[in-house]
Length: 193
Image (cartoon, rainbow, N blue to C red; front, side):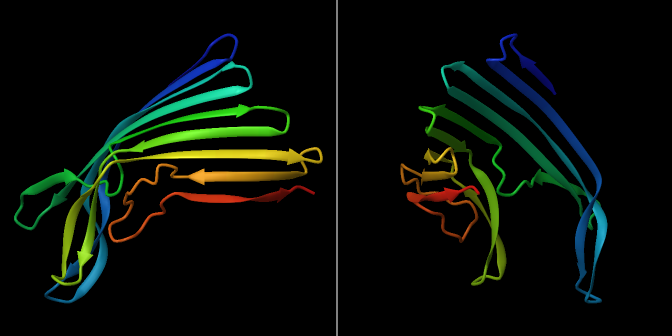
């Protein structure tokens, strides 16, 4: 990886490249003849990707941050026939992921921030109780827009906050078979003693 800061420290950027090779992936093995099961080292895993990140603080009391991630991974399974099979296996992990956050200290007491996240399509699997089989599905890409604000009282000892999530009421799935929240709001008071 590499990281760069400008002389005035208002702009920074970071880039990271990674590669991981695992020779012996732990695998749960079930022998249908003897009904014995155990963990064994069997398969090979190869993952790679990169991350890019940038931050800018050149606007008065405001910070802008952006990131992009790419990840890819394949497993090579040893089969009983002697032929190996290789396929993408990073379930629920998007290959592409990006985001933008803007935060600002409007006054000494009021701060606000907003962020936009884009999550790319992901592969998933679920157990179908009707057919007693594992079903592969592709989860659709989605975007989330969030907003947060807080206002402090009594020398920052009390903060009133509001957190608005999924403002556009995006319909999305993170895990097959489970619901996700639509537009929702959290608000309250924080006390520091």
